[in-house]
Length: 80
Image 1: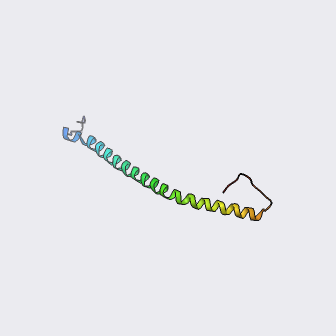
Image 2: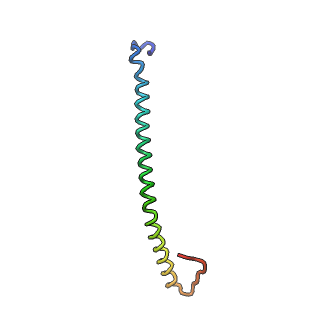
Image 3: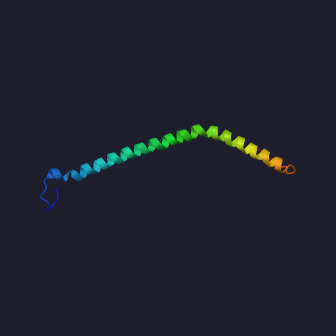
């Protein structure tokens, strides 16, 4: 009950209900955020192997082109 407001005991529970609603909203938002992050992580990991293959091919092509441009440049120990 709030002093001097003339409200009865029932009205005093409004802040409690509001706080509970806020907690539920935050829980729902947190749950959605966790699901969103999980799905993004799953998509990234699924595509990672494909992207790694593409990256390896691109690096091989860059190395081949570099060797064609600079035929005298021998890089030992560097693999693409």
